[in-house]
Amino acid sequence: MYYRSLLLPLQNTNLPSSTVLTTTAHLHNPTPLPAEIPRDLALSHIHDHDLLIRLDPELASYDQIASSNPANPKTKTYKITDTMHTLPKGLWDTTVSFEADITDLDDGTGIEWVIRAPLGLRQRSTWRIISREELRKEEEEKGVVVKKDRGETEWWLVENVEITANRLLVGTVKGKCEGSWRGIHGRFVEGLREAIEKGKGQEGERK
Image 1 (tube, rainbow, N blue to C red):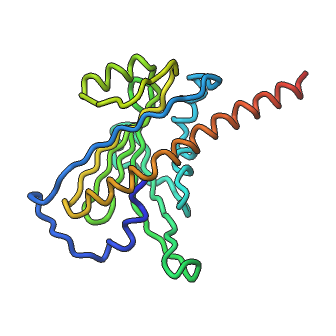
Image 2 (image 1 turned 90 degrees about the vertical axis):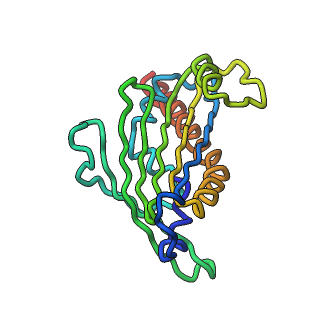
Image 3 (image 1 turned 135 degrees about the vertical axis):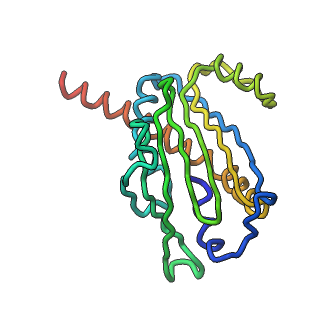
């Protein structure tokens, strides 16, 4: 979901299409969940496709369309349109559309996004809710260098991203991802907090 604002200025650019010039970049983005948020609530939100799509601050609209993988009933396909605020600021807007598959993972821990965008760009991401110990093992297996102690946080939102595109584009897209993921994860966590507060209010009304 991060690279979308790059597509508008680039979609009319003639980049080389040779697979020799195609490369892949990877990102690993873990966010601790506050202790007051139960795992079941986090999982219910992560399986809510509407909620996830709306985390995008540039979203204009989206529609569910015919699945690109009808053999898998867990895969839903969406046509997503984003609004791009072009310069000079506020003078006019324009949009870009692309398709995205969201699939609930078989192990129940989260979802997989696959986004197919202009210029041959393909972004595959997983969003999962896993334990601190599962995160530790995963990072150890992948050789991820952890710069600070994970503390005592039990449950984590873990996003792994794979970006495949022309070499001229991958670095820019990766930079966009690195600059945006904390804000998007923050909106997800804030939504969980709001759900807890709403539940407390409803419980108080019943009493």
